[in-house]
Amino acid sequence: MKKSNFAGVIAMVLVGGIISGVLLSEFGVTKAFARSIPFIGGGADDTPATSVDLAPLWKVWNTLDSKFVDSTPSTTLPEEEEKVWAMMKGLTESFKDPYTVFMPPEQTKLFKEEISGSFGGVGMEVGLNKEGFVTVITPLKDTPAERAGIQAGDLITAINGTSTEGFAVDEAVRLIRGEKGTPVTFTMVRGQKEVEITVVRDTINIPTIKNYKEENAQVYTIELYSFTAQSPQLFEKAMDEFKASGLSKLIIDLRGNPGGYLNAANLIASHFLPANEVIVTEDYQQKQPSIVHRSNGGEFIDKSTEVVVLINKGSASASEIVAGALKDHKRATVIGETSFGKGSVQELIDIEGASLKVTVAKWLTPSGKSLSFEGVHPDIEVVRPESDIEEKKDSQKLRALEFFATGK
Image (cartoon, rainbow, N blue to C red; front, side):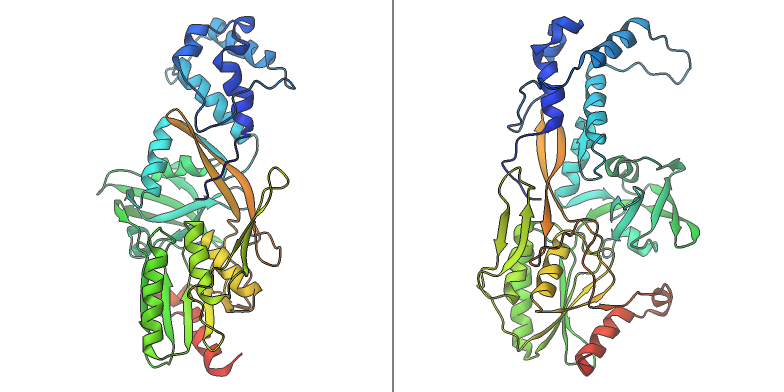
């Protein structure tokens, strides 16, 4: 995740500044309550906005406090703190960006566990597709989700019978996660049919890399499963083994790789590009200057090595940066399916136990194409049929081997 100095967070300007005491007495919210909960952290600006009249908001707050009567057995009266978290959450959702999310303390804890690299769950990356439905980006390699037959692109319509309609990603994650050894049932739409899959949760350790010479072919393959802090060193070791093999044809398999650290993507792409070539640009849309990331050229291998990059709709974020850079510079032939389209930069801002994950920029490939919602389009499109799994066949890999053999 890219960490930036961007501090103009709208949610905090409109809500945090008011709660912290500037307009409290006018609308009847007690100053004692305001002082008891610190709301601004991570360097965010808590200056009150003067362009917005928040009187209606406080009228709603005070009306609910003074008039609401619980009328059903399921009614739960929220604590004061919960109401404020809900206001922040609602404001964040009004931006209608699936990657800009306000997380109360409990969700923040789950999120931090997830990005730490080891957690309890089923082992899959989820996101929202273009229509806003909870979607499997990819099942991670050798996890309960993959073994149960969950596939990239599956639409999750319910989790343990709870409909996911209108869910943010973090709400889905909260239902998916649970104690090791407990089952979770997914209702999914795959193509034109509905499927139901039950998965037993386990401790998930995110795998990183696998490399080997292809059987019966003079081709070497490096499968990269994620872009962790250790990925550049592991990739460099794999590249050393590739060079030692004496082969000159290389497959970089980024299928099902949901991404990770930007720096890892830059260092890995640098193996294939001369120094100072553009890898990716962070476009802040005039809110601050764009940041251009370039190849360091330190481990550069020349074009005598033929390269194919395999992608599918489970390839996202850092995977798309690497695939997009090598494609634009004509350094690799990209084979497979159009990638997921996770082409944006998020900053995580601490809100004293809660947090705001906010989109601050978009990724642009060297040719200026936005990765957001467009993804990387392959040079050679190969959609892997469901029959591949049953037949233990890999049509996309076979097409890559055919390309090396025939040059087309």
